[in-house]
Amino acid sequence: KNKVLTIGELAEVSGTRLTTLKYYTELGILPFNQEGERLTRKYKKGEALERLEKIKELKEKRLTIKEIVDYFNKATKER
Image 1: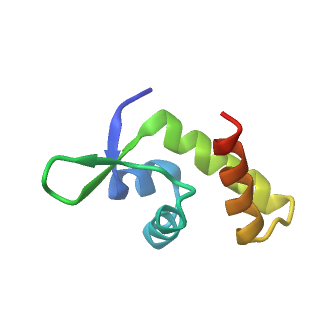
Image 2: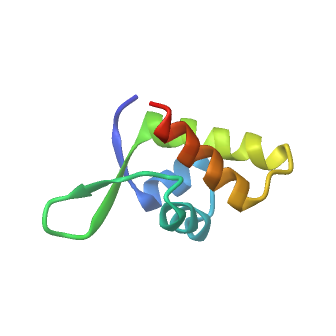
């Protein structure tokens, strides 16, 4: 469950476009781990898939991308 994936592997496993994953990462709603000196983004499979599922759920409720970002920012502050 906590297998580490590259962004390409995550795109394949989740059925999400690579550009979409990059966009979510840039927005800060899809966190990743930095690996070594190379700028390789690694995603924990279980966490990333759960996060993508939540993003999908919020989009289905017609939240805007800004509202989704705000949702995750608020959730992070409440921890």
